[in-house]
Amino acid sequence: MKPTILTCAVTGTFPTRAHNPALPVTPQEIADSCIGAAKAGAAICHIHVRDPQSGVPSMKLEYYREVMQRIRASGTDLIINLTTGPGGRFIPSDDEPAKAAPGTLLTTPEIRTEHVVELKPEICTLDLNTMWFGGGAVINAPRNLRIMAERMYAAGVKPEIEAFDTGDLVMAQDLIADGTIKLPALFQIVTGVKYGMPSTPETMQLAKSLLPKDCEWAAFGAGRHAFTMLAQAFILGGHCRIGMEDTVHLSRGVPAPSNAALVEKAVTIIENLGGKIATVEEARSILQLKPRKA
Image 1 (spheres, rainbow, N blue to C red):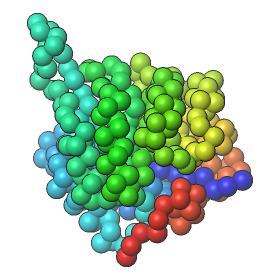
Image 2 (cartoon, rainbow, N blue to C red):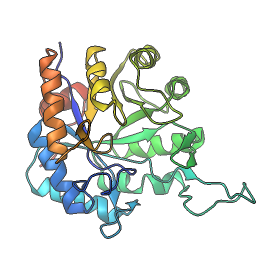
Image 3 (spheres, rainbow, N blue to C red):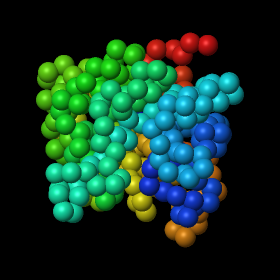
């Protein structure tokens, strides 16, 4: 059995400090949380950024840059995975649905990947979903996905293909066929997001059956089934993810004191099921990532 790669998604976009006061918000807090997660056993950290004052999700390059600089300056060996999800949301106006209402963030594929091209993390996400999501329509048109993927590969960054529904995996097959997605690919199966795939063993098994043969894959469950789906991903032979983006609770009614605590629990679950947690070096080998330059 190969080692299991554990990713920690440290902050996301939807949780707030009203949900859990320990949620990292500032670049320093996000970086420190990534470092703590790495020490607890995570080989990869998936990173969103927020406005340090308001805590509102942000796309500012300067915040991503500060987070990455702080992680690298710490000497912590960690695979960095930056999101490209922000910038896909459209909220229709009530009176004129063709016009954007306040809160719309829909922008160009070039802007959505600006930080990736500039900072060159090892991995970044490529979300395939077009769906109603958190009060707005997330739109990831095939044309835009092709542009984003091309920019990722040109920057030497491996896309992590995020699938929120089975149709996303059907689209992935087309993107593989036309050369947009290169094999071997990396997939993340997302369950538990409302109007996407539910967090059930049957759904995860179905999603796995739709993956290409030449890929590595992971899966997670958003919300109260986060640890259940982590165990299910391991049992089905996938890699795993946990973090405050996915759940702010260590157990029912118990807020997580840190992302590191979530990672420690995930490590215990995987090891108790007979697994071995991948080191950063092992994760790079499994995912065929180039060694990070000093």
